[in-house]
Every structure is written in C-alpha cells, then in structure tokens.
Image 1: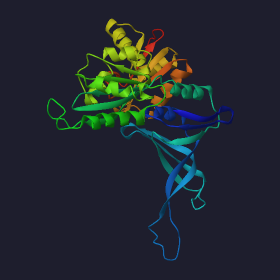
Image 2 (image 1 turned 90 degrees about the vertical axis):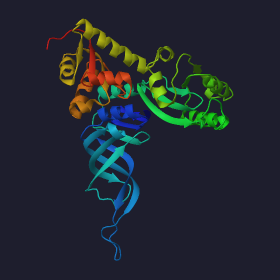
Image 3 (image 1 turned 30 degrees about the vertical axis):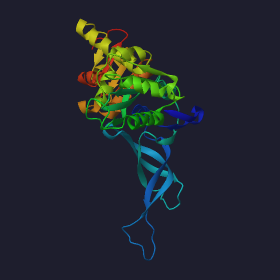
Image 4 (image 1 turned 60 degrees about the vertical axis):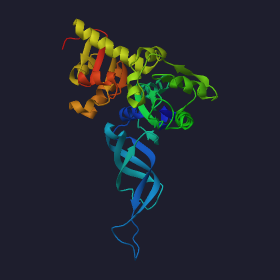
Length: 352
C-alpha cells in the first residue's frame, strides 16, 4: 500500500491499493460513518425535451461517500463500499442519493475518519511491512511462468509459450521467447526486487546471461538448481522449495510459514499454547494471549461473518499481537484453511 498523505490529527489518509493484501488492510481501516473520497463513474440522466427517460450519460466524477456498508469480495479481489453521497464534483449528481464503489488493486482514495486511533496507525504501518518482493521465473525450453510474491501473496503475472515442440528450438523462436519473458520482468520490476530463476535444464542459465546485460534487472538475480518444474504450477511449487526459502528467509512468506509450522508442531505435542477456528481465537484475543495470528484469505467459506473476523484481528493488534494474511492458493494457506481459516500462537495457555 502506498500512502501519499497521512495526517492522523485530522483523521485523513490518502493511499493507493497495490495488491490483494491491501484490500484486507483497507477493510480493517474503513468503518461505518467514515468518509471515502475517490474517483468513480455514475449515470447522470438529463431531463431534456427530446431525451429518453430511461437513458443517461455515464460520467467520471470525484465523489465523497459517508460509508454505510463495506463488503470484501475475495473471489474477484475487490472491496465494495456503499454509502450516502455527501459531495460530488458534478453538480448534476444529487447529494441526496447513494452510490457504491468497487475498490481493487490500482485504486486510489482518501479516507477521512472522525477519530484516528493508534490502532488504525498500527494497521496502516503493518501494511507497509511486506518485506522484499520476489519476481519468480520457472522456465524450460517449452515455456515459462512468471510470478510476483509480495508479502505472503503470490500473483501469477504471466505464462509464456516458446512454441517449441521437439528437443531443440526448431519450431519456435527462442530469441522472441526470451524477449517476451524479459519484457514481462521489465514491466513488473521495481527497485529492490529480487529475481529468482529456476527450472529443468539449462534454459534458466541462458535467461540469466541475457538478464546480465539489463542494467536494472541484473541488480539482484538468483539461479536455483535442483528444481524441475516450469510454468505457473512451477511458480506455485517453487515457493515452498527449500532453496527458495533460504533466499527469501527474511520475507513475510517465510515468517508466516514458520508460524504455521509451529502451530502444527504444538498441536501434535498437545501444547495448549495454540488456538484455531474463529471462536477459540476470539476468546484468546480477548484475554490478550495471542502473540501472532494467521488468517487464510478464504476464511469466509467457513461460515464466519466478515465483521467478526475484522473485530478479532483488530483486537489482537490492540493487545500487541501480530496479524498475517495467508494466500489460499499456496500450500500454507490451505493448511490454515484446514484449521477453520484462522490460527494463532499464544503467549500462554488460556482455559476455555
């Protein structure tokens, strides 16, 4: 999440949503009664002599909404905010009406809260602690998968086909193939990113040599041996590969994986300093016993209410605990989901 302006005394924060994790952060920040200012579009009907009453013109406007409802839709990566229009840049838009906006990665807005609490600042600061980003390429002579790991969330950026059918580059054009892969990396790369190359054979080494002539991309490139998958499935599998986890040892992903492993270890040993499922984690959160908590981004399939989840996560941070989000498309996210969508390590045992 990119924060361009933050004045807590005035209760105002201007920000840009970068990824799916940021939508969760925003869901925890926005409350009923807050004001959200953003750009959107709205149908405006013109009452003219020859205009059709059922037709209108869709215009782009800047609008301020007094929030009445917030819903996070993880299936399509968006946060839906509905509220009363309190201000609009177009005079034809009635301030007596209501409007809904869909916020997704790439969307900018300004949030105004009546009172900006220390909890809100902690939530905002936590969203900045995503660690390094990793551009992951799993490649062989037939194709490549390119993924972006931000925090604990993995996005498949692109898959590229070399067009090769035989054992040698006869049918496809290898120069064009590598050019396409490098082009995707250039479009996704940001200063400080680490590029990790893996896959069977020597194709990854050829790509590494080509990257060495790219000034920016060549700054931090690692080549992993011993990994034999490519394409998008290869990207997902590489995340849990031991060699990758050594490279990403300071990442949020590895931190989350360590928490998940410790939860499984304590459960197997009968250690009571662990909790899972929302009701149990809520009890421990109220007691201030939660040290760290991991929530799967598909937690709602377990029938829990969104408002209850937000309240528990906020309570954990109020009591000094740490909160993480796990990507349900990865193995660690599936592990968390199998425990009811939420797990927690406790500072001490709490009797139910």
